[in-house]
Image 1 (cartoon, rainbow, N blue to C red):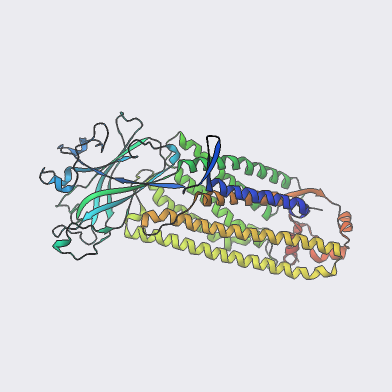
Image 2: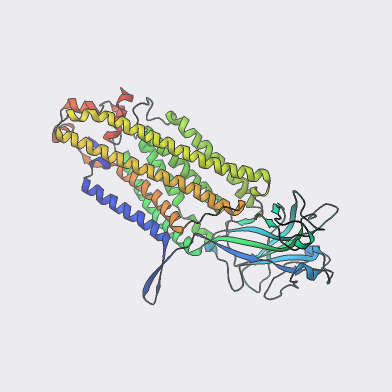
Length: 553
């Protein structure tokens, strides 16, 4: 009979394979955790920063006194053709400058710097510096309405090209901790940060933001928002060094997983029996891993593809759904107390909620990043209802994943208990046969524990990545994540999928029935105690057939 590599490979070779995979896992963490560069023929290593960088910008208050502000194009805060500036709002009063004539200008990046496609995306949050005035206080449920224009160029002397122009409303959530008395005038409110803009590509070297706060007392626009002194922005983008490491990992891992996947399925199709469900889902997991590995991000270096963030989320969602479904099926196919095996329909109660949750993730992502393809200033976090829904979604998703992990632990416990029940037959066997099965059971249990560890790290990664992405939008919660965490988890997924396809591939070692049993010193009666000889009970490993016996009988 022919089994899988996991049970036919010698212990020595299996340890070598395990050692290589462990070394590659450590390397995956080190790639993100260390930055090496060659300087004066000496390699120096420094702890790597996080995968993203935050840059603070303070707007410059420009004066636009033209009658038609729509024709008053791009006001530069510094450099050639810089605007007429004022230092503060008080300076505008003696010069008879109205609020509608003030434009808050922000140049991205800072002077003597350039943006790069390696930054991948730009996310901006906004902070308003609002001073307390007795005759101009912030009203309850106040809303600031900004007229925002975004432009770009690739040369310091080129003309600016408009990229977006929108009216951007944002609700103010400010508190004043001092008594509202005349002696406390001029102190600043404490205001929550506001989500401002997100762009899914950085295809140009320079960007310019012109922000106006138009006042219209008749329409109650920007009335009761206090005295805005300054506008501050925080720009977050991906580190160029991390992007290069990330692309390099994807470029290396894509052919590795694809080759092992083709090799695995070729061995499956060479067998006389049709593939069982477990073998099919392992192959499907390899396809989903290849899908997320393909380094299409290389095209973002040369093309202005703002949809890359959305596409990346979709790819990761497909992989999450396949990985979570695989673990359920992997455990379920090794449980004796379930009667319908080798049929995906037998898992609809477990896989169905995963599919529904993945679809909800897709809808949630489309509601924000889908809209941002046409309006980079849109955010679901700008309204109270949107913020509550987004927060509830993240919390519920985290709770569901934790419950999923607990359920997976319960399934693994059930599998271990079922196998332990079968081990009662081992003492009646010959010593060689008993040691053979004890070795197989130990290998399988070890793989199940590795699966649980991988599942735990995946759950932690999802929750931390959601909190990391969201804390800029809701404020108050900060999570520092090192680049090594991202590269390590990504490497772990690839190594886990690689190991599954390698270990569960049919072995090239084929034994005749008599030779197999004779070599192990076992009689036909002992064989029947642990396995079944009916055709539809065939599977990739003896453990698989062992745990299926009662279901088939």
